[in-house]
Amino acid sequence: MESQLGDTAWETLPERVRVDLRDVDSLRAVWARQRQDQTLDARGAARRELTRDRVREWGADPALTDLLLTGSAVSGEPMTAPHIAALAGRVAELPAGEIAEGVSVPRAPRPLRIVLSSAHADDLARAATIPAHPVVRAAHTYAECVRVLAEAAGEESAGAESSGAHGPHGSTGPPGALPWVLASRVLQRADFPPLLLDPGAPPPDPCTERDPGERLAILVAHFARLVTGALRGELGWSRTEGPPAQSPVPPLTAVTRRRVLEYVRSRREPVALILRALAPGASATVTSGDGVDGADTGEGCSSRWWTCLELVVGEVSLALYVIVQDVGSPPCGVLAVTANARLVTPEGVRQTLEMSRSDSVTVMPTDCVDDRWPQVRDLVDEAVSRSMNELTRV
Image (tube, rainbow, N blue to C red; front, side):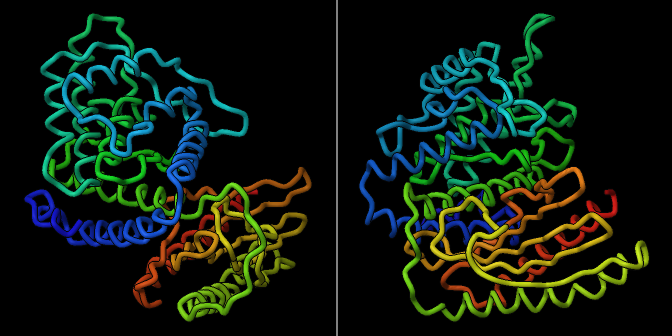
């Protein structure tokens, strides 16, 4: 990746976004080393399962999975105008999809219902082959496809169906299927995992009135978080998860766990004071442990440790878990720090913390704990704030 860092697009990005891309490259290097020990079939199965699960979360038609993936070819076909036009035709044949049970999204990504002109296909082919970091190229392709769809939709006769892309006036909604497909394939052409859009954090609208460079930087930062999640997902994927092998806890893991525990403990008393002002009998306690008791994150890992801040007000309680876990089995040296919460009321139990996957923090083997601590601290603060809001609403 280093050979791609000197291009013009890279130089125009803010430093914070360039840091995000360097982190992506570091994680990809770990991912690439692990892939050397896996068969092609195993890698393909992991990718297909992860992609299929994400398509289902969006409530999209299962056939979208095949369009997002390049198939048996590692990098897929070149992103030429005829190939993009053919992909657009296949997207147009997708059913709209239905929201699966337990899925909470506004609506599924909608397929393209208009015909791309040859000029539009040429525009998208150029976007998909610009000399830039793969994440920048994918973001640029996504944004250009949204623009093209809005432009093409404007040329259609009245009554034509919406493309499903973001509106030209800054309206928000689910992503169009075609921008997602093209960005995903651009990444795979560069030997990255496909783009796994997060229903909890849809892509920012690339058609706002902001400066074009600012719009691209925001989208690149968002895609960098998504690609980090996709890399981490493939690192942690396993068909069967056996018991973790007993091994010493690495120093970085131990320090991260200790800091999380100490920081959550430091938040307990201020939170308890606020709750007691609302209900004198309210309480806040902190516990910690390991395993999946109440703290399952859905990511493949060999070990996880959790710190729980439990808030009790009358008959209502909320357990906020901050989880530090090894990624992969056996662990690859990468840590994931995530948060979730469980609300218990007289009506029942439900998961309540509405934080997206992109809110999590990835700790690299080359990091020291200070490198990621500001992000981990912000994650805990945001999780505590949202938990308090949820509890006070109840």
